[in-house]
Length: 395
Ligand SMILES: [Fe+2]
Image (cartoon, rainbow, N blue to C red; front, side, top):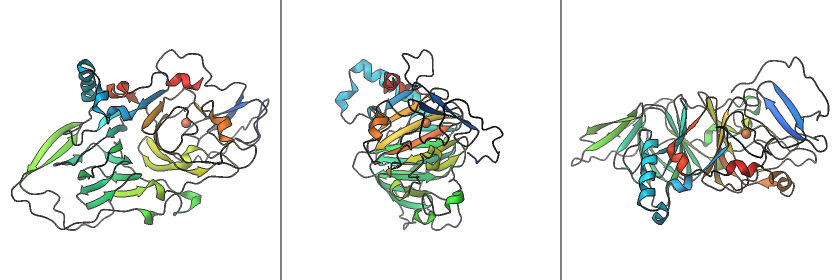
């Protein structure tokens, strides 16, 4: 994502339109932003007489999708169904395992392309180590907490943490005994943070809020063998050692594991103008971004839009993972659910969101968005937990 330096050549105006985008829409119209480059490029606002999501039916692959990831790991085993259902389920989960290792870890992939793979993980304490040489790993801790052990030392983590693990880091999770559910966003390219630009270097989160691992005293374990499961091209190689391979006693440099919690991210907003989702960018990677939608007040000026404008994602597939709070702009969506809006199909505020937004003065939602330039594909595991009627909720 980059800022465009191009001066618009032809800001033409035809018919009824708002002079300022997202403010004082002409009576009876619905605004759509038709924009290139994820709201950074050339842009036109279209004023329509009907919500573009008010369809009667959709034929073909561009349906918007919704998945309930809670059902990937049912808390109650009784929900897993009869033997045939369980067999189908095991097959779908198996087909989706991108380099998963033993059951204590085993991420389940639900969406992927050549740049990014999104997984849901429910780990238990690992008695082996994992190393991903296919890319950087970004975890969002949706539920649970515990201790992460890495080459760089140990880091305790809690709900709401993002954990960033550079490619090639050896690590394992030692979760506590609460329910564990993590979103894993695996990036083929290096994960970085966006330039704060005019907001200054301490905006969004102060770099001083970042935590890095602390080295612990090394403990000899003479009587056991340790395994490192190394993933390359989604295949696992196991390497064994007669000692604990996390034997680093010191390090220096600027490449390490790091953590930031969403409560330490301070979103920007304007009381007079609905800012585009790109202002909530937390991480940049090759051909995708990760944004955090966090509790914040709504725009307060009469006439200023309080909900996302309609758009059809000209240059991005859009994925949202809902973690906490009330998702005011999406009806029927709860914590642990995912929506995927492929490039080209409209979305915006859900039908009930516009009137609802006028009755509230803030949102308490916590959601993670992944916008990808290249088209995504769903795995069989995603198909297991899809809400097939999601497209109809937009009517
Ligand atoms: Fe969107």
